[in-house]
Length: 353
Image 1: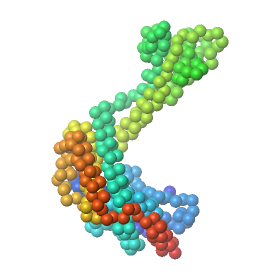
Image 2: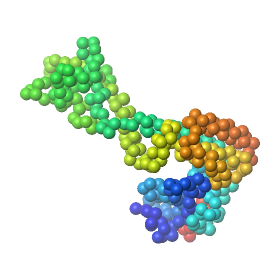
Image 3: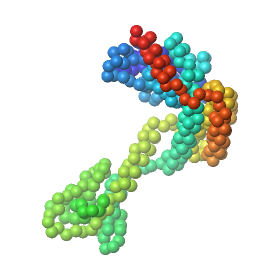
Image 4: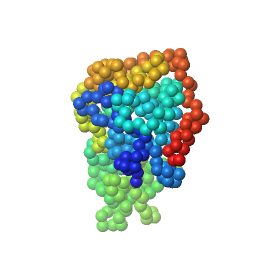
């Protein structure tokens, strides 16, 4: 397995820099140190079947991109990768001479209007999504199939659990059989404890589908059962996503967002506004300068001094400006892919020859 230690021990690193808040000039006492870099694969791995485009640590604070992947993302004007190439000298930890052949002006193009704004829009949506997780937490115990089943009896529909309780029945002694042409609706049967046992409605609380039983001929149907399978699948997906978020969340960031009570991830929104301001400057100045000049303004966003609506309005205004200046920009329409490929081939030949 290829690791970051392996890259360093075998001198496969081409570029390494400090990224994130410390590179932007937005670091505070609780800020982590993010490291980004570029590496190349040993010759046998590159020519063989073991190509690896990216290597990172468990927390993704440290990420290295294989040279080809780095060039590919540059050609697509990926915001994070363009920022890497524009890293100020004081934040560069190591730079091989070969990296000097990769020029920002060969990649910076009108594509940035779509990539920067598109990324910003996804982050605005993501920032708001935190509200549901933070203020509408999910229960620890996962619901089971039984919570999504309903019984139709005598022209009335009841929740399965209530129906079982009031009729003093147990799901383990129920049997289900399919009904032709009816999706997720089943004939429900019941047997006493001392009689032939069916397979129950579900085998356990962790089941992903109902259980079907072999029903004897001429057995009397007790009721009809409807299993809202689509709702159950949606619930299970949200349950997994929520508890995965709980496990991986930055607890300090979570507590900060909960304390200011604005209902969105303010750090995320700060970087979204920063990114839009960066894009605007690209079209105004034809330059990519990642160190901010409005640190206090951006930190006030992070501190939750604005409502979500105010932030959306600010983002909208920036996008209108970006659209205006992009039309007047002298940037190339998009990178010359033929030239980019020639550059990559040239770099690889130097590395492997």
